[in-house]
Image (cartoon, rainbow, N blue to C red; front, top):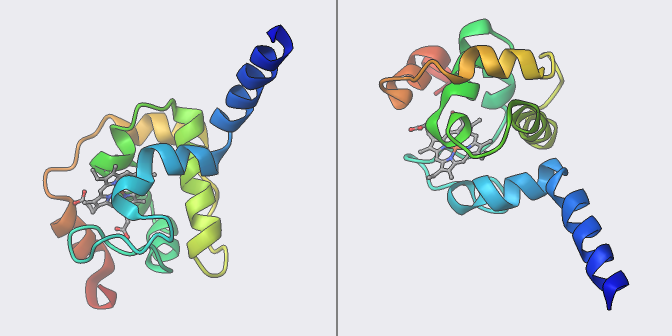
Length: 126
Ligand code: HEC
């Protein structure tokens, strides 16, 4: 019995550290399991993520959107989830993976109007 509890605890600890698990617990409610979201309010994850992640302003947006910046996970885990999402949905890696320090830098700068900023950043590709 004690061993069962111990293995369960270990299993939870391992699962909690995994980006996909963080996604399922903290992001999937809005972005859905396959990342298709609920456009136009919740944009579908696709290669626009790669375009955004290739510019400084775009990276700031990706970290500071409320769903990401306000999620109850620490900077390292948020970096992990964002990198996992990019690996899943963006084409060629023309971007650098997010580092914990970058998350911390952008996370506390709230965006007034995320939809408008996204539109400005993506221009005609939006
Ligand atoms: C309560 C709903 C909700 C949750 C939960 C949520 N998001 Fe979002 N997300 C949105 C909405 C809505 C947008 C569009 C921008 C905006 O209006 O905030 C968005 C946009 C994004 C974007 C930008 C995508 C693009 O193409 O513009 C990223 C990246 C993102 N979210 C990551 C996450 C991550 C990572 C999590 C979990 C840690 C998460 N979100 C949880 C609602 C949510």
